[in-house]
Image (tube, helix red, strand yellow):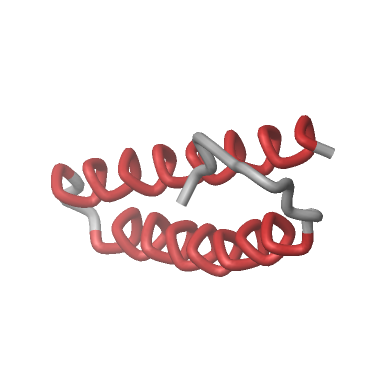
Length: 70
């Protein structure tokens, strides 16, 4: 059960890093079509984040939890 939480936390962190990377690419992009494609990918990823948070909240809590991702 704790391993599941770790996996979900790592997925959320990875997803946020991907979003940050795409935002950096948007700043450097010149083509409106590329910018639009990046924006669509970011929106899709942003919809996935709450689902991961929901999965995390459905995990049975332990008495003391340290190091949970936010």
